[in-house]
Image 1 (cartoon, one colour):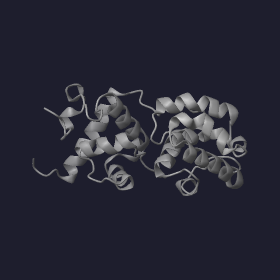
Image 2 (cartoon, one colour):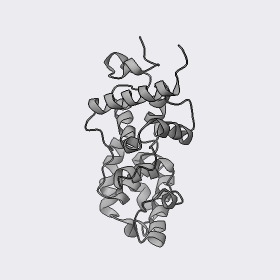
Image 3 (cartoon, one colour):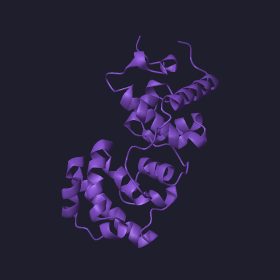
Image 4 (cartoon, one colour):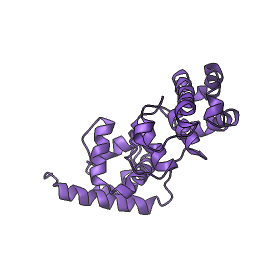
Length: 216
């Protein structure tokens, strides 16, 4: 295959984005939440865990500790018992309680609205910060790169990077800023429903014509 020019790559990326928008008009964050605090906590729990499992756990978590002030007073053992089924529950409980205490101490219990303020908080990496900013506040500071976004971006030839933050920069250069939050949902939905790891449904794929990795 001839080397793709930057202009051709941009054109192909925009076409893929347009088709995915038509294919998944209802794409959205599949973590259940009602406010920024709940989304932040749910995103921390989603590491190495499915959204379905997280959504099974968070109702009890938020019933017992509905906000940062309540969770800041919880003990690790209490939180661990509630979130045990999400995996890595000790580390996650430590992050959740640490996050709550930092929010109470430095932000009056509220989740901040900037990347610079979010990143120093316990349990918050760039992925979580992007998720919260884009979905809770509607702010386009970056693109949430989870395992589906990482995998599909490489299959589509949008980036060769293995590092999530480097791949994110490549995507930000290809995708219009107003679509930064949505492109994550579109790729995640497509990755869960059609371009499934190890068993992609290329024959059913709406974007196969623009995918260099499609199976014949």
